[in-house]
Every structure is written in C-alpha cells, then in structure tokens.
Length: 195
Image (cartoon, rainbow, N blue to C red; front, side):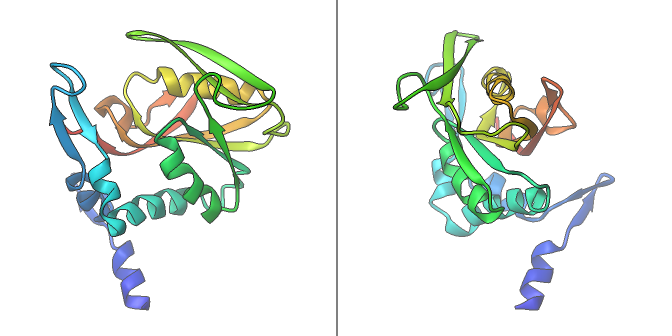
C-alpha cells in the first residue's frame, strides 16, 4: 500500500518542469470531436474520462492534493460540468459546495452576475446567504477558453462577500496553462485543450 502511494506521487522532470505522470492518462482519456457543436470547433469531450473510474479519481485526487490545507471554506461549481468535479473535491477538503447556476434554476432569493460571451450574453446565479463574509472559495469548472464565465463567477463570489482563492479547471487553452490570472485570481488548469 505504501509503495502504491509512493509510486503515485513519483514525478518526472520534462524540459526543466515537474510533470505528474497521471496527466498522461488524463490527457489520453479525453476524446476530441471535430466540428462539434458546429464546423471548425474541436470539442474536447470529457465524458470518455468519466467512463474510466481510475482516471476520473486521478483528476479529483490532483485537485484535492492541491487544495487540501488551504483553508478553503467553499467550492463553487459552475453549471453544469463544474457540478461533476466540485462536490467530490468539496467533500474531500471538508468544504461546502455552492452551485453557480444559469438563470431561474434556483428556488428562493438569488444574487446574479451577467456577462458577455463571444456569441451572446449569459448569467450566473447563486443563493443569497450561501456564503458568509470573507469565506475562502475555490471556483471549479471543466474548461476555460476565454475566461468570461470564470470571470463572472469571480465577480459573483466577491459581490456575495467571499474571497476567491483560485479557479480550477480540468482543461484550458494553452494561455491558461502557465501562471494565468483572471480578475487577479490564479487559474489552475490540469491539461491543455487537445486539438
């Protein structure tokens, strides 16, 4: 058992940087679907990753290893795929989970944040009272491309009184892989988008 844990944590050095060996399995488990949902788009399909329990667990474990001990009070997941990764990470680091939803999906009083996308406008909402002042929050989603949705999530959490510690994504465009920040907050991306 001890050897298994030790071998899992073994890292290799590539071009002067340390790379976790689990990243190769994660990357190879993501299917690229050309021309979906429209011509010219190379869609990175994570459902193939979810069908592989060990790889799915590796993703969760990598997030947990990074955030355990960072005194995070809440994990906010962006609809819909942030709901896949957020709850298991929140449970493992003993934080609450806050769903950030599209409009009119939450009952009761909500706080909203509108934002502009390349192709239109959208909005995120969360329950009023989901956060207490100064609670430390991790925002999580599956993918970051332009950063518009993630930036809206940061603004929403901050307006509700929370302190965003970091944003985490499974996938991101290359510009988000190296020390990127959105609204001054660090973005942690496990793997670059596959093309």
